[in-house]
Length: 117
Image 1 (cartoon, one colour):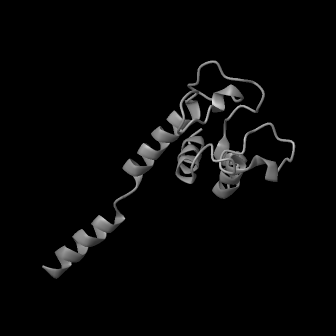
Image 2: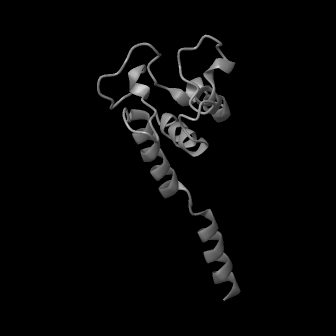
């Protein structure tokens, strides 16, 4: 009996726990990134970037592709969203976190979405 319990417990511990939560975060991050109007959660990334699945993308910023390869350190990407002027003082990209355009949680969701590109 004890062997069965240990076996079931070890199988349970190996099951992935985060995919549903992560999928929700990716979907919400996509919505924030593509959202052009409203008060909360407006990323408006399409104003400057081409993103797969986006309509009427801008061409001021680079196309958002191969993000994981470009930013293997997730925190580097998050910092670029929070305050891009840390990396380029004359950046045209808005400092989404520093100026309170997006919350920390919204930035994390956008990063989750961008990491799928």
